[in-house]
Amino acid sequence: MRVLLAATAAICATAAQAQVYKCLDSSGRVVYSQDPCPPSMKRETMSPRGVPPAPVAAPADVEASKASKSGPKTQAEQEQAFRKRQQDEAKAAKVTEQKTAEAQAKEANCLAARRSLANFEIGGRISQIDEKGERYYMGDAQIEAGKAQARADVSRFCN
Image 1: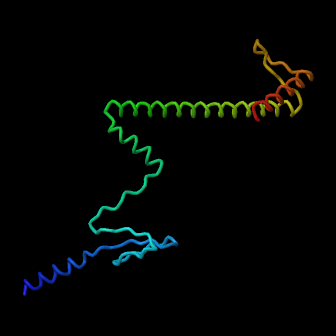
Image 2: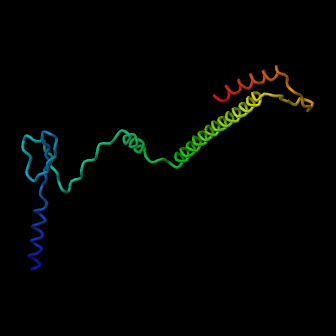
Image 3: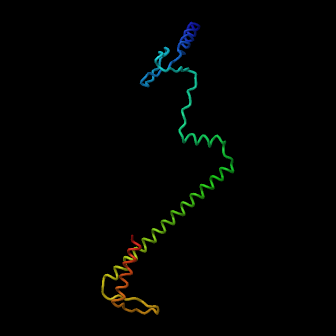
């Protein structure tokens, strides 16, 4: 009984290893069949044990494969690449920090110019402190000159 069962299994296994045909019709549709393709269709033979063809590499993959064909990087090359990345990151951080500092300085200058202009436009008596540390009151001409300077500062720092 066991021998009969083993023989039946062997016969079924050989029948399952039939050849498969891949046919493309005129509209580009793929048809799989156990029968050979008609002459009007493009045909490919497929083997169940065959290795499928490799997909076509994309342009980015081609560049990566060129880099990988040169071989693995040595420890020194890896260290050099790491240090270069660190330097690039440090430069980028420095530029970002500088831009942030410039923006903050411009914001502070704008705020100071607006406050100065507001003080001059309020009107009334405006006092200043001279080099000796004594308070004196500004005249009308000095107030107008101060307003003009404050307006120029606002237009320079706040735009």
